[in-house]
Every structure is written in C-alpha cells, then in structure tokens.
Amino acid sequence: MRNFKILLVFVAFSFFIACGGGNQKTETTSETPAASATETPAADATSYDPKRGEGKFDETNVKVDATLNASMAAAGEKAAGVKCTSCHKMSEERLVGPGWKGVTQRKSPFWIMNFITNPDPMIDKDPELQAQLELCLVRMPNQSLADEEARNILEFMRKNDGVK
Image (cartoon, rainbow, N blue to C red):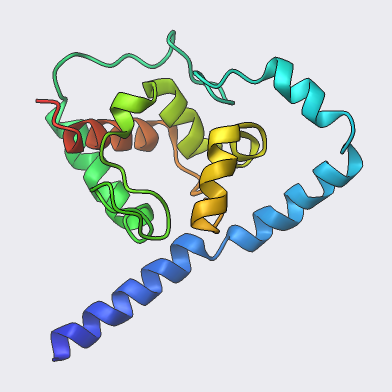
C-alpha cells in the first residue's frame, strides 16, 4: 500500500511538472491569432510543410540509420520517462496525448523532432495536429528539449516501433 501511495504521488507530481507550463504558452500564443487573424491562415497555408513541420530540423540535419542506436535509445527512454510518459503511452492507446506506437512510421524523423522541440507553431498550423487537439483537449506543452535530448527521444520512439 505504501508503494502505491508513493507511485500515486510521483505520477501526480510528474503530471503537474509536465503539463504545468501549458498556461504560459497559451497566454503568449493568444496574442498572435488576435493580432493577425485575417493574415496568418493564408500565409501559413502556403509556407507550412506538413511533411517537415515547423522548425530547424530537416533531412539535412537529422540523420537516422537503418539500425537502432541503442545508447541513444536508452538515453531517450530516460528523457521520455521524465518529460513524456506522464501524457503518452508506448502503445496506440491515448492517455492525455496520443499513444506513440507507429509514430515513426507515420511521420518523418525531422517532423517528429520539429514537433517535440517546437510544438506551438506546429499546432497552430498543422490541420492533423489541430484535429488531434480536439480529441485530446490538452495542448502539448513545450518541454524545452535540447537538440540531443530530442534526437535521443526520436531513437527511443524508433525502438518502441520495433527498429533493431
């Protein structure tokens, strides 16, 4: 029973930490749509690439080998345990956010890295993410991931999807 209480406190604390910053992002982004409500959608429709996402990552700076990098995947599992798994399951099942199973087969590596490091602009522009937001009802918070941390999480996602 004591272990259950400790686990419950840890889960509640992790959820609070992982999702607590969502209000700050909502406040900062709430000014942008109001200021350019008529201009932004047209500009976004022509400049947003749904295969790449919004951010600095693309096929030139995200290299993924055919085989799994086990040390990166292990580091990614640790980082995901702190920043991601309070909202995401490794299966297809939705928790707070969608499950991760199959994500590396549906999305490109640079799209994933752009999204996990830069979620706000992508949610604002990507129709699939907007539809996902309607289902999940919680906007993904920016976890302030370093590039290396994001790359490690991507490798952990690949491991979760069966890459050997």
